[in-house]
Image (tube, rainbow, N blue to C red):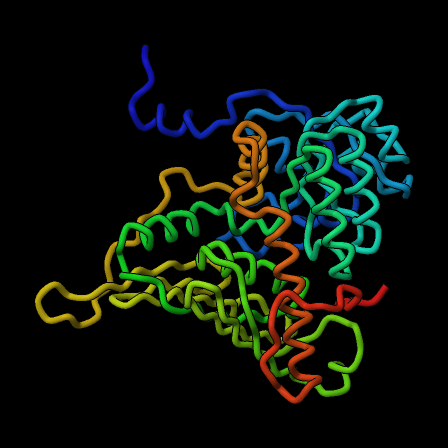
Length: 360
Protein backbone atom coordinates (compact mmCIF):
# COMPACT_ATOMS: atom_id res chain seq x y z
CA UNK A 1 0.00 0.00 0.00
CA UNK A 2 1.35 3.41 -0.91
CA UNK A 3 0.78 6.68 0.88
CA UNK A 4 -1.88 9.05 -0.42
CA UNK A 5 -0.86 12.44 -1.71
CA UNK A 6 -1.93 14.23 1.49
CA UNK A 7 0.26 11.96 3.61
CA UNK A 8 3.18 12.58 1.27
CA UNK A 9 2.77 16.31 1.77
CA UNK A 10 2.77 15.89 5.56
CA UNK A 11 5.72 13.48 5.45
CA UNK A 12 7.71 16.02 3.45
CA UNK A 13 7.57 18.46 6.38
CA UNK A 14 9.54 16.06 8.60
CA UNK A 15 13.19 16.93 9.18
CA UNK A 16 15.35 14.88 6.84
CA UNK A 17 17.79 13.79 9.52
CA UNK A 18 17.51 12.33 13.00
CA UNK A 19 18.72 14.48 15.86
CA UNK A 20 19.54 14.18 19.54
CA UNK A 21 17.78 16.71 21.74
CA UNK A 22 18.24 17.95 25.30
CA UNK A 23 16.76 20.49 27.70
CA UNK A 24 18.72 22.83 29.95
CA UNK A 25 16.40 24.13 32.64
CA UNK A 26 13.88 21.58 33.95
CA UNK A 27 11.34 23.92 35.51
CA UNK A 28 8.18 25.51 34.21
CA UNK A 29 8.90 26.07 30.51
CA UNK A 30 11.17 23.09 30.17
CA UNK A 31 8.85 20.58 31.81
CA UNK A 32 5.72 21.54 33.76
CA UNK A 33 3.84 24.46 32.20
CA UNK A 34 1.14 22.26 30.65
CA UNK A 35 -0.11 21.45 34.16
CA UNK A 36 -1.29 25.07 34.41
CA UNK A 37 -3.35 25.18 31.22
CA UNK A 38 -5.78 22.31 31.35
CA UNK A 39 -8.69 24.68 30.64
CA UNK A 40 -7.33 26.01 27.35
CA UNK A 41 -8.32 23.11 25.14
CA UNK A 42 -8.57 25.32 22.03
CA UNK A 43 -4.80 25.64 21.91
CA UNK A 44 -2.94 22.37 21.15
CA UNK A 45 -0.56 21.00 23.73
CA UNK A 46 2.25 20.59 24.58
CA UNK A 47 3.79 23.94 25.46
CA UNK A 48 6.65 22.61 27.56
CA UNK A 49 9.85 21.94 25.63
CA UNK A 50 10.43 18.37 26.85
CA UNK A 51 7.11 16.84 25.75
CA UNK A 52 7.24 18.86 22.53
CA UNK A 53 10.61 17.33 21.78
CA UNK A 54 9.17 13.88 22.51
CA UNK A 55 6.25 14.44 20.14
CA UNK A 56 8.34 15.96 17.36
CA UNK A 57 9.50 13.92 14.40
CA UNK A 58 13.19 13.59 13.65
CA UNK A 59 14.44 14.24 17.17
CA UNK A 60 14.87 12.17 20.34
CA UNK A 61 15.02 13.63 23.84
CA UNK A 62 18.21 12.12 25.27
CA UNK A 63 19.07 14.20 28.33
CA UNK A 64 18.57 17.23 30.55
CA UNK A 65 20.44 19.52 32.92
CA UNK A 66 19.44 21.67 35.89
CA UNK A 67 21.25 22.91 38.97
CA UNK A 68 18.16 22.06 41.07
CA UNK A 69 18.24 18.30 41.75
CA UNK A 70 14.56 18.12 42.69
CA UNK A 71 13.51 19.59 39.35
CA UNK A 72 15.93 17.32 37.56
CA UNK A 73 14.51 14.22 39.27
CA UNK A 74 10.92 15.27 38.53
CA UNK A 75 11.87 15.81 34.89
CA UNK A 76 13.31 12.32 34.67
CA UNK A 77 10.21 10.74 36.17
CA UNK A 78 7.81 12.71 33.97
CA UNK A 79 9.53 12.10 30.66
CA UNK A 80 11.40 8.83 31.14
CA UNK A 81 14.82 10.44 30.77
CA UNK A 82 17.76 8.83 32.56
CA UNK A 83 20.64 11.06 31.45
CA UNK A 84 20.22 13.81 34.07
CA UNK A 85 23.06 16.24 34.80
CA UNK A 86 23.53 19.14 37.20
CA UNK A 87 25.96 20.81 34.80
CA UNK A 88 25.01 21.60 31.20
CA UNK A 89 28.60 21.23 29.99
CA UNK A 90 28.65 17.68 31.34
CA UNK A 91 25.34 17.05 29.56
CA UNK A 92 26.81 18.12 26.24
CA UNK A 93 30.06 16.21 26.71
CA UNK A 94 28.35 12.94 27.62
CA UNK A 95 25.10 12.98 25.61
CA UNK A 96 26.29 14.97 22.56
CA UNK A 97 22.94 16.59 21.72
CA UNK A 98 22.43 18.32 18.37
CA UNK A 99 19.58 20.58 19.56
CA UNK A 100 19.37 22.06 23.05
CA UNK A 101 16.32 23.88 24.40
CA UNK A 102 17.43 26.50 26.92
CA UNK A 103 14.67 27.28 29.40
CA UNK A 104 16.72 28.77 32.24
CA UNK A 105 15.96 32.17 33.72
CA UNK A 106 16.95 35.12 31.48
CA UNK A 107 19.78 36.08 33.84
CA UNK A 108 21.52 32.73 33.26
CA UNK A 109 20.69 32.35 29.58
CA UNK A 110 23.54 34.39 27.97
CA UNK A 111 26.27 32.31 29.63
CA UNK A 112 24.50 29.02 28.86
CA UNK A 113 23.91 29.91 25.20
CA UNK A 114 27.53 31.00 24.72
CA UNK A 115 28.79 27.86 26.46
CA UNK A 116 26.63 25.58 24.31
CA UNK A 117 27.84 27.31 21.14
CA UNK A 118 31.46 26.93 22.24
CA UNK A 119 30.79 23.23 22.92
CA UNK A 120 29.72 22.74 19.30
CA UNK A 121 25.95 22.27 19.66
CA UNK A 122 24.34 22.53 16.22
CA UNK A 123 21.22 24.47 17.26
CA UNK A 124 19.99 26.27 20.37
CA UNK A 125 16.30 26.92 20.98
CA UNK A 126 16.25 29.58 23.71
CA UNK A 127 13.07 30.74 25.38
CA UNK A 128 12.08 34.38 25.64
CA UNK A 129 12.81 37.08 26.55
CA UNK A 130 16.22 36.01 25.33
CA UNK A 131 18.09 37.97 28.04
CA UNK A 132 17.96 41.21 30.03
CA UNK A 133 20.27 43.64 28.21
CA UNK A 134 20.99 44.48 24.60
CA UNK A 135 24.70 43.89 25.18
CA UNK A 136 23.89 40.34 26.28
CA UNK A 137 21.73 39.81 23.20
CA UNK A 138 24.55 41.05 20.97
CA UNK A 139 27.00 38.67 22.65
CA UNK A 140 24.66 35.66 22.34
CA UNK A 141 24.18 36.23 18.63
CA UNK A 142 27.90 36.76 18.04
CA UNK A 143 28.89 33.63 20.02
CA UNK A 144 26.54 31.47 17.96
CA UNK A 145 27.70 33.06 14.72
CA UNK A 146 31.36 32.54 15.62
CA UNK A 147 30.85 28.82 16.29
CA UNK A 148 28.43 28.08 13.47
CA UNK A 149 25.52 27.39 15.84
CA UNK A 150 21.91 28.06 14.84
CA UNK A 151 20.23 30.34 17.40
CA UNK A 152 16.43 30.14 17.42
CA UNK A 153 14.23 32.05 19.85
CA UNK A 154 11.26 30.16 21.27
CA UNK A 155 8.55 32.59 20.21
CA UNK A 156 6.85 29.46 18.98
CA UNK A 157 3.78 31.18 17.51
CA UNK A 158 6.02 32.10 14.57
CA UNK A 159 5.92 28.39 13.62
CA UNK A 160 2.24 27.82 14.48
CA UNK A 161 0.54 26.52 11.33
CA UNK A 162 -2.38 28.93 11.62
CA UNK A 163 -0.01 31.91 11.54
CA UNK A 164 2.21 30.44 8.84
CA UNK A 165 -0.90 29.86 6.71
CA UNK A 166 -2.00 33.44 7.35
CA UNK A 167 1.41 34.67 6.23
CA UNK A 168 1.27 32.55 3.08
CA UNK A 169 -2.19 33.93 2.27
CA UNK A 170 -0.97 37.50 2.71
CA UNK A 171 2.08 36.92 0.53
CA UNK A 172 -0.20 35.35 -2.09
CA UNK A 173 -2.16 38.62 -2.24
CA UNK A 174 -5.26 37.65 -0.23
CA UNK A 175 -5.51 41.08 1.44
CA UNK A 176 -3.30 43.13 -0.86
CA UNK A 177 -0.03 44.69 0.31
CA UNK A 178 0.38 44.60 4.10
CA UNK A 179 0.17 48.09 5.57
CA UNK A 180 -0.21 47.77 9.33
CA UNK A 181 -0.41 45.33 12.23
CA UNK A 182 -2.38 45.79 15.45
CA UNK A 183 -2.03 43.74 18.61
CA UNK A 184 -3.77 43.81 21.97
CA UNK A 185 -1.89 41.56 24.39
CA UNK A 186 -3.16 41.08 27.98
CA UNK A 187 0.35 40.58 29.30
CA UNK A 188 3.45 42.67 29.96
CA UNK A 189 5.51 44.02 27.07
CA UNK A 190 8.70 41.99 27.28
CA UNK A 191 7.88 38.49 28.51
CA UNK A 192 4.72 37.31 26.74
CA UNK A 193 4.77 40.42 24.56
CA UNK A 194 7.84 38.96 22.86
CA UNK A 195 5.51 36.58 21.02
CA UNK A 196 3.58 39.49 19.53
CA UNK A 197 6.70 41.39 18.52
CA UNK A 198 8.30 38.31 16.94
CA UNK A 199 5.12 37.79 14.90
CA UNK A 200 5.20 41.45 13.87
CA UNK A 201 8.78 41.02 12.67
CA UNK A 202 7.95 37.85 10.74
CA UNK A 203 4.94 39.37 8.99
CA UNK A 204 6.55 42.78 8.37
CA UNK A 205 9.47 41.14 6.53
CA UNK A 206 11.69 44.07 7.54
CA UNK A 207 13.46 45.30 10.69
CA UNK A 208 12.03 48.00 12.93
CA UNK A 209 13.55 51.48 12.45
CA UNK A 210 11.96 53.65 15.16
CA UNK A 211 9.27 53.64 17.85
CA UNK A 212 7.12 55.92 19.99
CA UNK A 213 5.87 54.58 23.32
CA UNK A 214 3.65 55.39 26.28
CA UNK A 215 3.78 53.27 29.40
CA UNK A 216 0.80 52.72 31.68
CA UNK A 217 2.60 53.72 34.86
CA UNK A 218 5.10 56.56 35.25
CA UNK A 219 6.75 55.08 38.33
CA UNK A 220 7.23 51.67 36.73
CA UNK A 221 8.65 53.33 33.62
CA UNK A 222 11.49 54.76 35.72
CA UNK A 223 12.49 51.27 36.84
CA UNK A 224 13.87 48.27 34.97
CA UNK A 225 11.06 45.79 35.57
CA UNK A 226 8.79 44.47 32.83
CA UNK A 227 5.67 46.59 32.44
CA UNK A 228 2.58 47.39 30.38
CA UNK A 229 2.12 50.08 27.78
CA UNK A 230 1.39 50.99 24.20
CA UNK A 231 3.59 51.69 21.23
CA UNK A 232 3.88 52.62 17.58
CA UNK A 233 6.54 50.75 15.60
CA UNK A 234 7.83 51.84 12.19
CA UNK A 235 9.37 49.11 10.02
CA UNK A 236 11.91 49.79 7.31
CA UNK A 237 9.56 48.89 4.43
CA UNK A 238 6.74 51.19 5.52
CA UNK A 239 4.69 48.65 7.47
CA UNK A 240 3.50 50.02 10.81
CA UNK A 241 2.79 48.20 14.06
CA UNK A 242 0.47 49.23 16.90
CA UNK A 243 0.98 47.37 20.17
CA UNK A 244 -1.09 47.63 23.33
CA UNK A 245 -0.40 45.53 26.41
CA UNK A 246 -1.88 45.30 29.86
CA UNK A 247 -0.64 42.89 32.48
CA UNK A 248 -3.95 41.42 33.65
CA UNK A 249 -2.93 37.96 32.34
CA UNK A 250 -6.49 37.13 31.28
CA UNK A 251 -5.19 35.65 28.04
CA UNK A 252 -8.51 35.72 26.24
CA UNK A 253 -8.20 39.33 25.12
CA UNK A 254 -5.16 38.60 22.96
CA UNK A 255 -6.08 39.72 19.44
CA UNK A 256 -4.07 40.58 16.34
CA UNK A 257 -4.93 42.19 13.01
CA UNK A 258 -2.83 42.19 9.86
CA UNK A 259 -4.28 44.91 7.67
CA UNK A 260 -3.72 45.12 3.92
CA UNK A 261 -4.97 47.43 1.20
CA UNK A 262 -7.82 45.07 0.26
CA UNK A 263 -8.50 43.08 3.41
CA UNK A 264 -7.46 41.91 6.86
CA UNK A 265 -6.48 38.77 8.76
CA UNK A 266 -7.82 38.74 12.32
CA UNK A 267 -6.90 36.40 15.18
CA UNK A 268 -9.05 36.42 18.30
CA UNK A 269 -9.37 34.84 21.73
CA UNK A 270 -5.71 33.95 22.28
CA UNK A 271 -5.17 32.37 18.84
CA UNK A 272 -8.42 30.35 18.95
CA UNK A 273 -10.18 32.06 16.03
CA UNK A 274 -8.70 33.10 12.69
CA UNK A 275 -10.59 35.16 10.11
CA UNK A 276 -9.77 36.26 6.57
CA UNK A 277 -11.59 39.30 5.19
CA UNK A 278 -11.22 40.49 1.61
CA UNK A 279 -12.99 42.77 -0.83
CA UNK A 280 -16.12 41.69 -2.72
CA UNK A 281 -15.10 41.34 -6.39
CA UNK A 282 -18.02 43.49 -7.59
CA UNK A 283 -18.85 45.94 -4.82
CA UNK A 284 -15.49 46.18 -3.06
CA UNK A 285 -17.27 45.81 0.29
CA UNK A 286 -15.60 43.72 3.03
CA UNK A 287 -16.51 40.05 2.83
CA UNK A 288 -15.38 37.18 5.00
CA UNK A 289 -13.65 34.37 3.14
CA UNK A 290 -12.69 30.85 4.15
CA UNK A 291 -9.52 31.00 6.21
CA UNK A 292 -6.84 28.64 4.83
CA UNK A 293 -6.96 26.22 7.75
CA UNK A 294 -3.86 24.06 8.18
CA UNK A 295 -4.07 20.44 7.04
CA UNK A 296 -2.21 19.16 10.05
CA UNK A 297 -2.74 21.46 13.05
CA UNK A 298 -0.44 20.63 15.96
CA UNK A 299 1.15 22.27 18.95
CA UNK A 300 3.11 25.35 17.95
CA UNK A 301 5.96 24.09 20.13
CA UNK A 302 6.11 20.82 18.20
CA UNK A 303 6.05 22.76 14.92
CA UNK A 304 8.88 24.91 16.27
CA UNK A 305 11.10 22.03 17.43
CA UNK A 306 10.83 20.38 14.00
CA UNK A 307 11.47 23.76 12.40
CA UNK A 308 14.69 24.17 14.35
CA UNK A 309 15.82 20.76 13.10
CA UNK A 310 15.08 21.84 9.53
CA UNK A 311 17.06 25.04 10.12
CA UNK A 312 20.13 22.89 10.73
CA UNK A 313 19.58 21.29 7.33
CA UNK A 314 19.02 24.66 5.65
CA UNK A 315 22.01 26.26 7.33
CA UNK A 316 20.11 29.18 8.86
CA UNK A 317 17.13 30.08 11.02
CA UNK A 318 14.50 32.05 9.07
CA UNK A 319 11.37 31.86 11.21
CA UNK A 320 12.60 33.27 14.53
CA UNK A 321 16.39 33.76 14.67
CA UNK A 322 18.28 35.42 17.47
CA UNK A 323 17.94 38.75 15.68
CA UNK A 324 14.15 38.58 16.12
CA UNK A 325 14.56 37.97 19.84
CA UNK A 326 16.98 40.88 20.12
CA UNK A 327 14.66 43.16 18.18
CA UNK A 328 11.72 42.25 20.44
CA UNK A 329 13.79 43.17 23.50
CA UNK A 330 15.11 46.34 21.85
CA UNK A 331 11.63 47.55 20.84
CA UNK A 332 10.31 47.15 24.38
CA UNK A 333 13.30 48.99 25.87
CA UNK A 334 12.95 51.72 23.23
CA UNK A 335 9.22 52.11 23.95
CA UNK A 336 10.05 52.67 27.60
CA UNK A 337 12.85 55.08 26.66
CA UNK A 338 10.40 57.01 24.51
CA UNK A 339 8.08 57.39 27.50
CA UNK A 340 10.96 58.49 29.73
CA UNK A 341 11.93 61.19 27.24
CA UNK A 342 8.43 62.60 26.89
CA UNK A 343 6.98 60.19 24.31
CA UNK A 344 9.41 61.20 21.59
CA UNK A 345 10.50 59.16 18.59
CA UNK A 346 13.37 56.80 19.43
CA UNK A 347 15.52 55.47 16.60
CA UNK A 348 16.85 51.93 16.40
CA UNK A 349 19.32 50.44 17.05
CA UNK A 350 19.75 51.98 20.49
CA UNK A 351 23.23 53.31 21.18
CA UNK A 352 23.24 52.37 24.87
CA UNK A 353 23.54 48.58 24.80
CA UNK A 354 23.60 48.44 28.59
CA UNK A 355 19.90 49.27 28.84
CA UNK A 356 17.91 46.44 30.37
CA UNK A 357 14.37 45.16 30.70
CA UNK A 358 13.52 43.00 33.68
CA UNK A 359 14.91 42.80 37.18
CA UNK A 360 17.55 40.35 38.25
